[in-house]
Image 1 (spheres, rainbow, N blue to C red):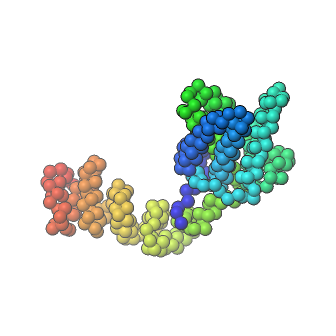
Image 2: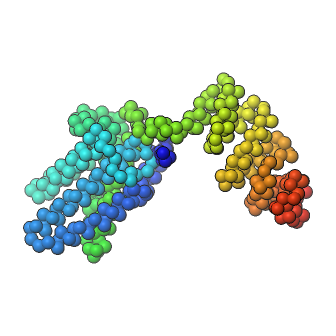
Image 3: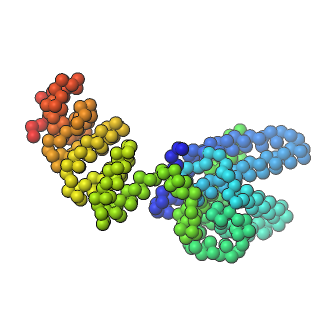
Length: 386
């Protein structure tokens, strides 16, 4: 199974909101925005039909496009609320009626606003303010409860808003700003030729709606503990063992307080199984230093240097070489190709003492290697005398 991209668990809310500005321009969200923008050309076809039929077709097309936009935005909110970092590529399954119910709620609100605009314009502003205040709590309630009756319960509104506190003003303000920006986008697009204005308007609308719903999902994720949520993303990642190494490191950090030897053995066994990520190696070395096992630090250094070089992380491998030299000044990687690579890298990045040590050690151990001629020239011309 592919690796699941999860949202950061402890990122400050301000950074989350700023990072969210890129969300509608990535992955499936960008694809959806472009596709829905191009679908706006269907409005041109509807306008080409004369009379009442053309008007009806235009309304149907507009409703279909807005419904598709809401559908995808709702999927983004549910995806974000469940701890996923990336936008969905396709529609998510309906979680207890959540996305479908949300579309119905928004459709009813839109219809009510249209009716007020036609027959009672003096009350339209009040309806917009009420919608801006209540829709976020309904949307987010459906995201983590999935029950329409619960989401429409005024008691739920009071409890949810109370748990969010002043932070709840963020989605309210976002809804108000969204309405203004959509209106501004429609005015700006009307000044352009239809062939350019319609898709630009569609793209702007989709971007703003997806951003608004993503921010609401982000708030649910950020305050998940207040609502007793068990997000799907982290649970799925644990089920497939994606974060097993992270959990092992955390467990060993706690275990090391009372039994560092057992913690070190658990990490050693993990490293022997297969290639391990850097935190596992770093924690293992920290425990070995705590246990004063310099012999094992040097032995592990060889293993980790080989893994880092094979993974193309030669700079980090140089750091491990330096650590090992602090224990044994004569330390040298036991693979000639890796030693030659690291010697050349050390020279290029301006660490001549380390480069000279690696080059001289290489020539002493592997004088007939194909890289020996180049390293001899380096030692003769540039390597300092230690």
